[in-house]
Image (tube, one colour):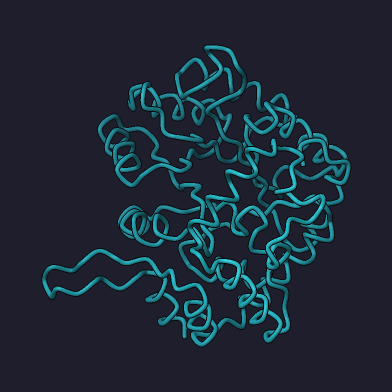
Length: 327
């Protein structure tokens, strides 16, 4: 999507469905994605107050000062991103990954500086562990700085434990939000791969990524899905057919019915994909505990919560508790 000629139409279709949040990063195409998004905003003449835009910082190039979360990189990075996006500010600036080298105080002060300079309104984390998020919050409390508000973790029917178990205390105690990525597992959960073949022109056929990298990502998902992974995909497809929706809509709905999902990020190379994905909203609206149970029976990968030592039984999963309260 970095240089996708359809991008203005894709954004336009998304806005028609009420989508107002758009996410990118300095590392995507090393700035190309930000330029493309900025050009699309300009072509569509979108009122700035009507959209929420975020970008992420960790790597902008191959130079020694183009990586990590130092004050120098973040200060120069936000200015460069705003120029590429053709915006005066972004709504949320993310720390794209945890920096094991730069002191946390420097990281927190740098994002606080961005906010004070009106270059962003909020800052957030991406793929940080609960311990790292707590470290940032403690640092901000001690220094009187603005705290991060959300994380951008991967969450889908294959990748569940970190979101549903590890981050649960952060959601509950810190009121942390989320902007989940890869809800369709790089397209693997859409139904296109159910017969274990790789369609021509699909993500895993290569293109943006080298074939070796595609194979590595595919293998990781397959191993996480188990030996009967493709049987599970076919069963999801059958359930979607039974529910009169597409497999992609079913899988997206499964994500967004989780109340800890503040925002579900989807990617598209065609406007038609936006239209299909938006159908997940209707599926989610009619979600039932019966549907939830059927999916759990197919996937058989419900994460094991921590043990409540007081009664020697596992804690309830937040996902289950929230859905039961809803119904």
